[in-house]
Length: 576
Image (cartoon, rainbow, N blue to C red; front, side, top):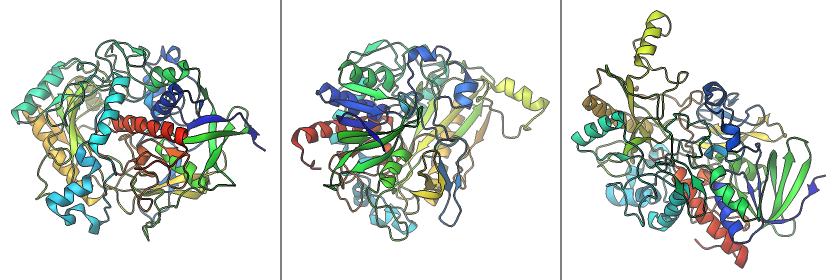
């Protein structure tokens, strides 16, 4: 029998960006908060030898252990799903800070078009443009950009985002808290080429600090050293905004917050006397294998997308989505991003061995509805990126497509091109499709006896058309940059392959909305079926955008925290 612990006001499942934001905001209001984190404790002292590409970038030291919990995958319902035994396409984090510890720091805002995509598309192009006949299921989020702006501003100030105003963006309530990062030789080359094509490049909004910074909660972040070890790595300088050096520290300073590590939550417990409420969660201490029950007034799911979905499903909360009938909402709206482009080979060298996770430039000329879609076979688009994140010897091994895969010529080209290649690439939207969803796979179990999550996903014809269009724009810029040789991504992206890394920017599974018929949570991220249960993170997104989602993850977490505080005070259901 599970050992019952002392009750708390709020328990969060996970201690990353969303869990940390919810914890900090509620603890500052005097609520007693506990986070249950399945991974270990780490802090900056553990990262003094983090410049180990093999350990962190190749062997995934900071990532989820697939031998304990993973997912199964298939492209379509007529295939057999098989387990993912090694992380590839995306990289869920584990431990203090979660995926927010190993992220790059790209901190975009979604566009007004994202939040009202169905309404705006119908008004401009007509209903047929939404692609319902091909299986796409677009809808509005139930909240507007104007309502979200103050939460974006709050997250950017917490994270000390370095950036400059976007001429294609919406009006900001205040400037970025820090100026843009340094503009390198390669960035200046991209900027010049893009402007010659009448495009609007800006320095990428970055949670790598362009200068030392103290955030509104008093947490101090140091100036970035451009060491080139950001993505897949923690920061030993405290120069990258991560949950562990911002919101988690803030929460801990209140004296109202505790993180319990190595604690894997297995079930959300519904109140036996009131099925509109939950009473807490069950979890297993992974070091001792003891089972505990953590009672709480409010339960908040703040873990990675798959775990948010899984905990609801194994706890029998909500109705599983059925792709045949399109009934149910839990597991629906799973989306990803495509990210292909053009690689240029130059005679001159660039100091690409230096860099930072979000050192780069971005343009939104082909994002959202910033360009006309009348004659195109898709809606939305994607941002075009040029980054200098730092070339490292294992993962940075770019050669021309016509180079042999091994041998003397390969070695010569590998060495020659190490600092002579640049890439322009897109980060493209994908839309919700009726056949893309999460379910449980009863064939495969995790280490605690629960079924693994099963993902059914593939690229669509619309994704292919959008990718082809954006790749052409990337090539145009690379040609203007003067590359001696250009390799372009394939026009046909083919079937989605979960093996190679692509992006950790996944979304959906517990989408938000204004009606329980088409969503799992309301716009405060409060579950429709359990008043004191909230779900935060990208799992609540209705679709994925053409920008990095972390800024939006942070913004909706602040809105969620505001709702939790109000709910705990009034004990009444929140209105959209």
